[in-house]
Amino acid sequence: MELTQEQKNIMIEARLLEYRGRLFNIEMDMVAAVAADDHEAHHELQKSAEGLKKAYRAVEGMIQHADTTDTTA
Image (cartoon, rainbow, N blue to C red):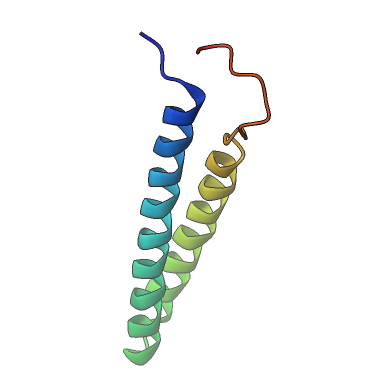
């Protein structure tokens, strides 16, 4: 049984919410790294945030809107 496009979009939105939460956690860790004067950790966290933002954009591009044809329904 295949998922409908609506079900897929719901799953995509859930993943995007997860990514936003993870990005916020990274941002908090970056602030803490700066406060602790840990430049190496801050740099690594920046790289992680950049990768997560790329993943976010890629998954976001998977959303198909209701006006497109759903061949699975």
